[in-house]
Length: 314
Length: 243
Ligand SMILES: Nc1ncnc2c1ncn2[C@@H]1O[C@H](COP(=O)(O)OP(=O)(O)OP(=O)(O)O)[C@@H](O)[C@H]1O
Ligand SMILES: [Mg+2]
Image 1 (tube, each protein chain N blue to C red):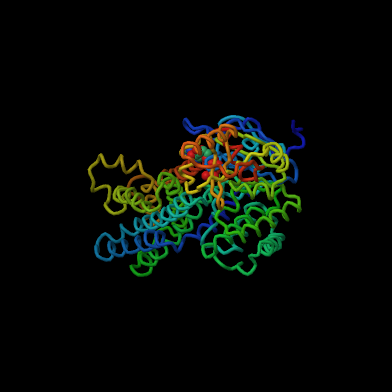
Image 2: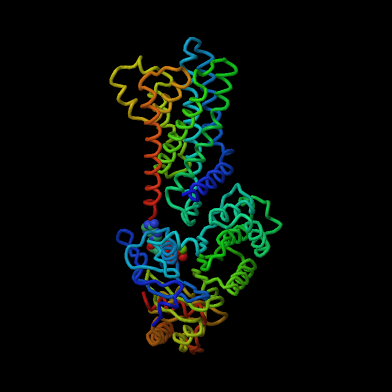
């Protein structure tokens, strides 16, 4: 499927076992040059574990991974020179200022002395941190901390940037700013690998997405491909008369639903199996003496799609 | 090689800046040894000359180990320790960086004690130049010990409790406060098994011109050797600390 030479990150059968838990289970994928690759999955899916194995923070149980042809275990020093890593928590040094934090990173990444300051100033401006340059990390807001943590991963102009949940915990505004900045970095020829549990985010900024659930990759493709492949009229909209029942009541009595939510007077159901849910709806209405005042199908949006893909692999 | 050394120095300077003012480092690293020395030396009269080198050894021991406690236990707990593992450096370089920051803190810790012994109490060292070497070796050994010990502590709120649980017995069993010659003979084997003994011995020789337990060639060599072994083991532990 993928030509290995084109892969900036090439992962084969990567597996991580903790005791009896398979956190990551024979995962394979290829990230191409200058791509934004989204790694989407629910909590506990194995996203962080995968990133940590790729960047050398967690040992690999089996399988292998190459970054620009370097084996992430054997050639770890070479890999570290060309990657930048943003962990899931903003973990810079509390007592150092923004500038000092970036300077430390620059030194550790061998940025030549004459170029450090210029690069740091550029990043401070790029991330809107210029006026905070002499503020200690511990005094920054959450969003600014996140941005500085990303900046610290970029001081050495890495070819690949790994970000673990870069926008989690950020408000809508900061999130959007960050998306724009990531896209701009990508335009500057950085390949980006990012994990997220936010479906909208994955579909919004990725060129390609891998969906991971329970340690297994369950789908890979561009947002368009994924939408096409899975979205065949898969959301059921239903209304009853009288309409007093709760979503809880519905989910207790109708089997095979991945999610149900009330929208105005009707319910939207993402089914695991469309037909059995429709049967369930009819039975439910009958047993309560309700009239089904509306029943129709529509195609799923990204979030519903995600539920569906993940649900099917349970 | 040079490159790795330079980076360990960057790590050390970063640590020092980040932690030297933290309460744990100030109280146990700077204040405690000084107050301790003050209490022992000024009140006990007769033994002051014997006590002086031991107090210096204690100060650098508490100073350096308190820094490792802060810079390793806290960083490991809050995730910033892993940042170091993302840079293109070896694990031994990280261990050396942590040892160096402890080393710098250790050197700072002895300043008040040196002023007390040399200026206030006017007890001059016999071999001043050798004293410099002895202090460097002893601080290196104590620092590497502190780095190793730090990897055994998981909970930062307990760090000083655990450290003191280890440091206090060591202090009494190192020919620092109570001369080993006054202790039962079997204690000597315990004394010889712990690193603080060698730090104290090298400083004692440089300060007094005589030794209590081991001839200087042996204690100097052992202090260096123990420090290097601890350092290498710490590098190994860092590599193995990955989940
Ligand atoms: N150090 C560890 N020891 C034991 N189990 C672990 C460890 N780290 C992760 N796991 C387990 O591995 C599985 C995958 O965890 P991981 O953190 O990779 O998920 P994630 O997709 O990043 O989730 P989240 O969205 O919550 O960040 C989980 O079941 C988790 O409990
Ligand atoms: Mg995670």
